[in-house]
Image (cartoon, rainbow, N blue to C red; front, top):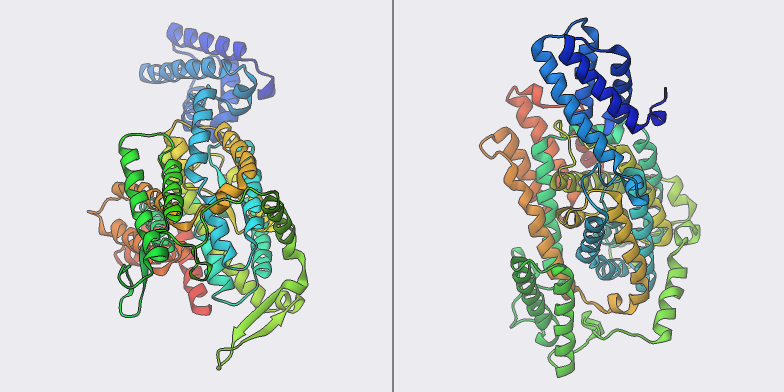
Length: 569
């Protein structure tokens, strides 16, 4: 009998009969046990307790007569199974059946609140992503619409393919890598960079259909998983402090705190002050448990900026990248966003736009390559390989961090249904590239929805709906400046840093690699570089210490790949 044909009433009857036989003569009724075993095995992949029950039942079936201790153990498992069946049976509503609300011990109301919470805590990306990618030359309006649509598509894919409360959008760090690493650093056009993102998304999808990505996820030690989440937090915080002008370049020390005497107070100075004030306000609201504190902090900081502009304290100066803070609600402004979206969607498929520009000895820029010649050369594989490494470990790091926050990892540190999550993430990456935005990935801010009680894909569906509605408010999000979104990123960094408290700092073999991973991310301005430091140091330190059993064989492979990558690039 197929498991989908077994009714819950039959399962409950089999449990009752099996309990009766065990109590009566210490024997297992094989017919009833086989029914329960089929039921348990069908759910064992996504449920650790169900897998344990299946093992116990198989052991009982192997014996003609079970001992008293075994009967007590099996009886306890049967009582637990009866509770699980009753919980699953009560999922009778439409949403309950799709997202298995009762089985996950949640309600539709809780999931809706969690979805709204997640959207409110990550809505800043609608303002931040256009700011970052427009620096690479991608039209701001087009980036905004690409960001919202990619978030909707990616989040819905995640909701229905994995049933996790993970929300997707163009990733922080990954957008910075495209802008400052590939376009401004390596000299490639943004269309060529998006082509590389599109292809690496397809490559990731192929890998997600195999055990490769899942194997890498499971092979990374728990201490490094915790360190990755903390390091991403510091990296995001550092980006925020830079974009707000609080931390500035310094020739002697590389970075330094802004000097208000040496900058134009009406542009850079007041922007930095407003960012710091917004951070304090957001922190205060978190202490007072104000719902949506992060989004409220963004809006309050922005409103304070508009008040400063109204009173002449803040003076717009496009040359200093200090733009007007007032939203443009005119029809022309909205129409311009859609015209710019027409310039970004599908732009990666135009070979004429694929260029590689280098600076000569005299500082003048010159085109070193263009069109299909770039794709056929090593250049394309260099860029794609760079995105491949960054995306791979950024995604794994985020899944690790959010899953740990939500308690989704099993006792062995593995994530059930990870294949569906990875496939959704991969497809979203390629879709986002076609629309005109950088790598779309699972967001660390999904943790805010998890904290609010979100446990299923219904959380993502609600968040996706709000992202779709955000298209109507494009003028608002496009007017929000970097200094207003900085408080949100700083607070998100604080939230992510909390995961390092679970690292055992008394064990140097675990703690030193974790520490190196954490500090390398902001210092190297790269999440993948931070993971590289952690992986190589973990393998080297523990191998030299003779702790070979700690090191999964995949860690040796990753170490070799990291060393090869940085030796060749």
